[in-house]
Image (cartoon, rainbow over all chains, first blue to last red; front, top):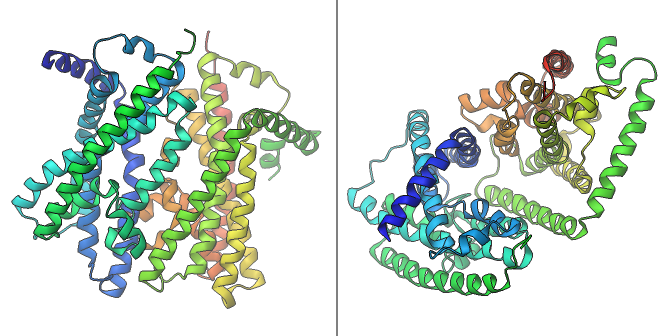
Length: 265
Length: 276
């Protein structure tokens, strides 16, 4: 099994490397929103001193950390896999003795991630000097505790996206559903603003949803803003959602593949 | 001026023919979109969802502050309207036509465009229109009117006129930049990412560029001038701009279109077909 993953990694890395120019464009595209939110909220914080206890530096560190966390926990499975169901190229992968979504597509995502993090690093350093975040409160323990949380977040997010992508077995085109899913993430993950500044009702709902595990929870963990009880609660929620997401994906996938009648077959 | 008119409408029978062409483009595109009715409805619903999100995000911001960089809620709603105008142009016109254009450079079907007895620039930039997006224009104009009303007493007849003129010239600046970007494809055939940079910075138009740090403000004003089409018109409406500045921005609109048509013509001369 390890050998299979090794091979898949070589193939996928080489494939992603081919598209490095596209990848830079994607990176640029993805960078703009967090930087704009950062600018908007720091400008408010500067003019008022603080926003509900958030100082300008709190916003700068939040979004600067978000850039890294989002790169680790997000995935592109909808773009890299959706079309395979649509145009039928999935057939070839289905007859292999390995799970298409949990091996090849997974490795594809991770190699994509590796390259984007490579591209992000110099950009992040430039942004660091432009915005000068003060990371004085960050402790090694917080960062170390955030690493498993980010991995957990990635796998939860990946399985949920994979489940959404697998809806293509029924609808063929899945981009509209994905857009809706993307809006949910925007609303409940803490991407726009730290969740504690969102309306109370959204905070209450977000607490039970998996989306905050992708961004808000790991970011707060790194920044050392969570109490011990909150840290435990986050990990418990993460564990529960990982199991739920795994079951959900498996169920959608199994029923979907049964329905799958490859185009042109 | 004469040359400018010529660049777009061609000599002689000019604008009447252009209008006729535009009408038939619209007709074809309506027919194409009718083939995907369910898609169209879903897209409109998604569009409403994003409008809801945009208004929610503004309300979250204004729950925490009374002004953003000195701008009130009404002015930000109007700005959202202007942003949606430009964004509609991006989605309804720039995307589909760029896709078709890139394709035509790759497979050589650009030959047929050049052979047509109409202005090639017009043909290439207007032949695809995502028709249902026109409803987005209605939404955008509603937002602008509501926003101006909310911001209240400051708007006068002359400031509204300034606003309209600046919006038009700003839109022309973005259109011209697009022309330049796709014209570059004549030099670098494999330049499929030609409008990604424009799209990437688009989101910066949602908020007044005056709140951005200087380096970002410079990028969105001078390099990829999204702010010229979004923030600047709103500044005109607020009366932040002197007459000189207004005239300069309107002149920039004309100049950028003029430059774009020169670059386009030079590019066309370079074009040699895909197979030759």
